[in-house]
Image (cartoon, rainbow, N blue to C red; front, top):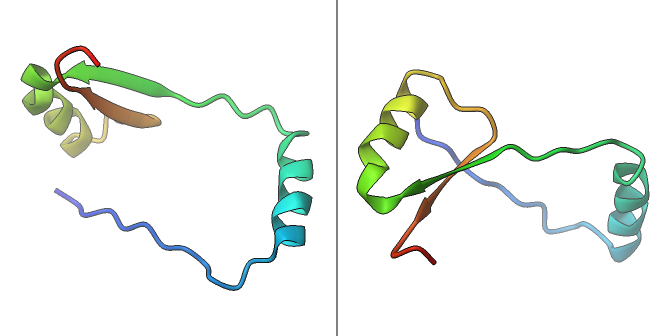
Amino acid sequence: MEEKEIKSVANVTRRDIEEFLTLAALIPIIPEVEEFPLNEVNRALVEIKEGKIHGAKVLRINGH
């Protein structure tokens, strides 16, 4: 399975963020999130491995 990495940029200013959010508000962003109960973690991992992932997979622990 392929590893994912999250990177951040430390030299972003408040103004940069304000400008970005103004532009982002003009784009119809529709997040795709699929939730899995913890006991279905293997199914979620298989879907990720097989490239069947669109958006985010979220594991729910004890229904929270």
